[in-house]
Figure 1 (cartoon, rainbow, N blue to C red):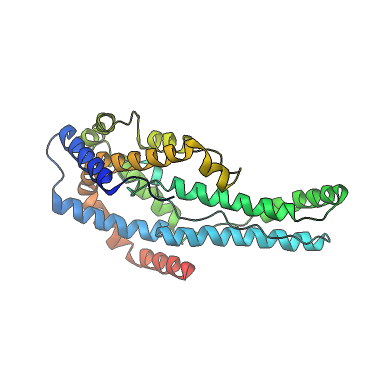
Figure 2: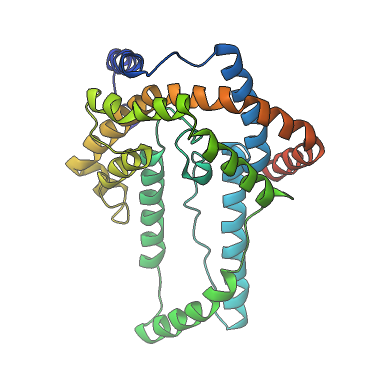
Length: 289
């Protein structure tokens, strides 16, 4: 299932889109040392605020488990045995602070195919659980009513957030919103659409690219066998890989410029908030252990 693009094809796409990014670059590229420093500092801040992909997955699974546990306890009080549903969470997903293209995480793929397959496999498990039910129609109606009454309370489970996350996120997004207005970064961002077009992807932004990939996938609720057999599945998988490869090459010049420009501000922020950032990083690590 994960065989998306052959090694040769992947290299071809990578070389093509990298060349595209360079051919459309406006002005001089970001100064390498400054870009590397800014990227390293940003990663420190990002890991503390948002955790790693594994951290975020652990947090999402924790919320899902607490939700299912709360449902089971509530249903038990109402005289029903609730069989907890398997989690649909399978990856932490890329981060997109403030929906800013310059600092939205660049990943090898968008994670959509992985998520869709997991959702389809969960749908299969839920269908099997329902098929094994021995309840009468009247009992199913009473069960459904009880479940509906329990759901609002169970839904009050809150995800983990490190102390001070809100203010730090506000600073980060406000800072990079201004950074994206600087000439070097703005010019680099402007190369994205023509670069993607040359790579064969007609889009307006990263978020449009992602949505285009998402919209190509068939329904996951019908189950894995049905989704895999749908001709749209392989087409969607291949498009996602192609789009993600092009996005990575076309957006990196702007990201490098943004990190280089913001490096001094990031350094000041990290120095000033070192204790808070370290505490948040520790909390994320403990959550995923």
